[in-house]
Image (cartoon, rainbow, N blue to C red; front, side):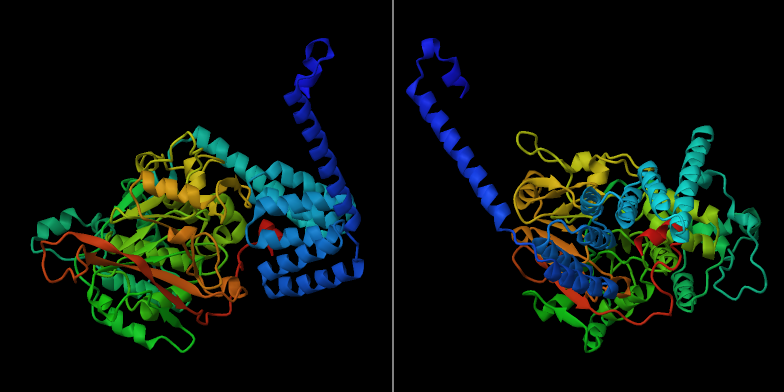
Length: 595
């Protein structure tokens, strides 16, 4: 068009004229097609309402994905149905798709600017994305529209309180840069005679002079990595199984020691499989899974039971009794040097036994750092803990200082791991890079990510914690509002550039407990069965076995070059009963926005 208009003396070049005619034709065709599409939409309000009601039923059952499907189908019959958008926003909030929830809430408000529930949904999304001021603005609007709504006023008060606490914490941090872990002394906490839980006993050395010198330090030394007795760890696990709390003095010593240990651990861990196979009971107990549990052996023979292995678990989300089921039945053994585990983030929140889950993992880590590896998830963060219950749980079972120590531990959790130079393990997904022409992120760049902080809103750390795979090529804005979605081409480019074979991530509930994507190059594993007591999903874990380059059992000789046996073995299991404490029991205040 520009070429035709710019032609001298009104003489139009034939090529320019042809392009102009083609442009006019395409434009008119597209406009006509759009008009026909819009005119072909027959609004069926009754059908839309019926689908909304079905979606509401699924939502009440905790079946969020089917609910979303019903709401989406309803919108096909009535694209201007504000309630359908608002209800779908709520379902998206339930599965932490904050970006999509925000979009739907805004669509509902565009259709009905006085719709209080849509403001409520948008406030919830803003809150999850740590946008307190925007959340407060929407909650104030709810209170204006519904001045008698006591719940709305409570949520507004909770939001304003959180803003003040956040501002106060930042002021204190700026004023006093010394973290609590450097000043807190657990020895000030006295264990009373009435406490019946696990206790540590001072080990007596042969030289009484050494005992005198170490009278004040013996307890701290026992909590040093590698020194904590396994018997004490197992006593703590059994004590917590009875819904009893381990004494705060022991918890404080453990958190301080873990913080120092993790601070010395690189952002990217390099993990090798053990030299020996797990003890025999770690295999035989797998035969004892209950009838509902299913074990899937993907082309692995029964001989894998005699090979060294590493177990990778996904989200556990405060489901302590399911964690014990993994150790005692599904995988046949608690963590040990010959039966090591990787837990891939999201140990806390949602489930109301988060303290028990994270303490169990940290105590085993202190007992033997090589028996258990931890990566950080998006729920090992202050804002998520405030919303989804862990903060309230720690303060109910201990106090605010213990919560602050937990946060310091979380800030130093590693962000990823590489297993046997073949498998990249991280909670969310791959870092966002424009692979053409910019090359993929390197393992060296990931290893150099600074920690000791809350995740920034964007960047490598944020992407590793929040991103998700998508089935089509390229990258897209994240449905969560943080991170991004990456396609199979991104996975292939990252793995090829870093000479890796497989990406293992977690972060998303899956009906079968796991999902293989991107042509077998990406595996999602989720280890919290019947998530939040409502989802009905299975839990799963992965087992990676060591094998020799010629395919023979590597126990026959020590001179063979060992490699990782791929694909991993998938093990699925069902949820087990737990005490009658509902999920998010401790998510008071703002947590109610997500219930």
